[in-house]
Image 1: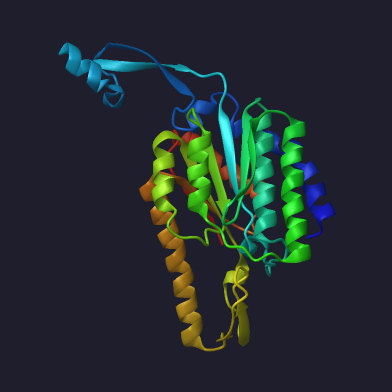
Image 2: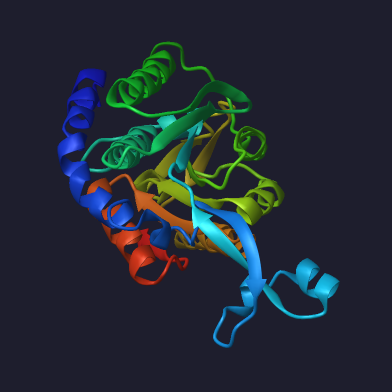
Length: 307
């Protein structure tokens, strides 16, 4: 997709994002995201009916009687977007919409940012590949969001012109987010997750923050009949694949399903919510359904898979 066309799509998102903001942010934002935005205030005596998860075990042991923690709402919440800009995100897919995983990720990130803007929440972003390339510390406002968008479009243009081959290191981005964020926040990781050994950092981040893994998939990951040349976009390695053979196609499809199942299992084990979004999906509709299900379930973890 041409940069100008992608920018036109993004400019229309503030209008579309109102519906998502209603599900994601309006009313009681904290009810969607597992009670985040709550700060410890005081402890009081336990009363029948109190949630046992709120028991203050230190105070209870000190005074010999049960105490529970009381919280107050914080006025300001933070959303941090971790956006993968590695080479595999820029590969061109075979979808009828003609967008790459990176373009779908940018549309999703911009939609979340504009939705947060509706209620004045802070939004920040990391752009990462093997390293964290650019950091936008959390701020509010339309001008700030558009500067974030323009940076994302610059990375798309640079990849198209120079074709820099760089892999992704999700663990580095997650560790960076943990260092940056001081108060409980919402962290959204947007990537194709062609990366390994990120689950430890994800688990650590989930202990203090609410995390969402948004995996961008592409129909290109599935084979078509005939002899195909498969290329790793991050290393340039090419192989000839006998995609016409039933045995090869069967093994390839099994590997794709196994990889998706492993990813969702790791997310669940880490305590992160997760959504798989194809380049052929309508991002606003998929995100609206996802955040709506989280809100109606009190912040539980859901999987929305669209292939």
